[in-house]
Amino acid sequence: MAAAPILPRTVEGSAPRLWVPRQVLVTPDALRWEHGRRVVERSARLGSEVVELKNNRLTGLRGGTEREEYVRAKTTLAVVIASESARKLQPIPPSADWQFHIAEGCPAHCQYCYLAGSLSGPPVTRVYANLPEILAGLPKFLGTGQVTSASADRRNEGTTFEVSCYTDPLAIEHLTGSLSECIRYFGAWQASAQLRWTTKFNAVDHLLTIPHARRTRMRFSVNAQSVARSFEGGTASVAARLEAMRRVAFAGYPIGLTIAPIMPVENWREEYRELLRKAAAALTGVPDLDLTAEMITHRFTQKSKLVQLSWYPRTTLSLDEELRTKKMTKFGSPKFVYPKHVAGEMRSWFESALAEELPSARILYWT
Image 1: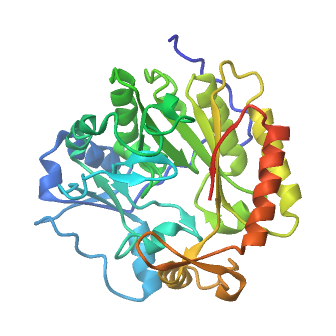
Image 2 (image 1 turned 135 degrees about the vertical axis):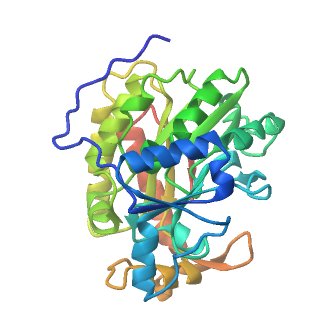
Image 3 (image 1 turned 120 degrees about the vertical axis):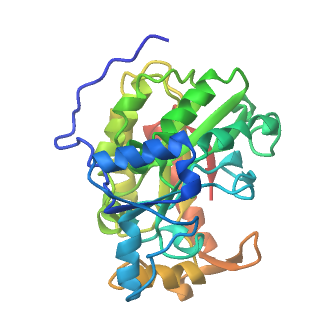
């Protein structure tokens, strides 16, 4: 595949703003890996204070109020090792056959963040130094799984591996380089396999010339403007994300829209219609376009609600359990989703609107 042209930016002020952590905590085991040392070197060059820990336990994150702990954690990057249990792949329906992790945590400030109920402790971003070991464990899962490997509709995707369950890998890529390594790995992997990840950021220029062999699907998480402006702090604008999607699509990558979390805000039909029209405009003229759509409605658990309110006590995010329907998660705990009639109306509208505005989009799921 010929190198893709570096397209000029069309969104004013869309040059990516890169997160620079105040401090980088690095464990002794992480420094034994070349990949870990590179993360430390990149961070130091950008001005982060590097703290080499005496043992493999993260310290210095606790203390003060919950808000102070949150701020401290959100300005910290930890370079650690993924344990053997952390490297054990788990299924991740309906997105992909398997999930693997190159990092945990995210520097963004999304007030609805599901990681608030999924990860324990202060929300520090952890990046795994033993990336080669993580990638070496993937081949044994080839041809297995129940989402794409066993699906007549999605079998052409091959065995799919999701890498953005617990992080936004593009948000920290300028520090880690992990995402680039994953794309190269899948591009050189002569197998029916696909890497998948989603992002709310736009620093994609360095990914455009990587030999990806169309085995990486980049998806961009987008939302109505009122939702993005109110609840997605520290991320790229929706316009900048759509421009980044355009750039990687012209570079030949399969792409996707992750519309999430969908909320029935005031004038939601008009706002989401405008979003779909802007996405369609961004993709005008893309050759061999391979576009998917994934739609996820807003939901929360009691645990995530408590954590989110401690992090964002002034949020206007609707977390009223009386306006929701209680369902059980696969782990046996309750979650609160929109009532059936609300979710059904939104689903019907989105399926119709996507067919009208983005007829080439293949809908993967609604949840």
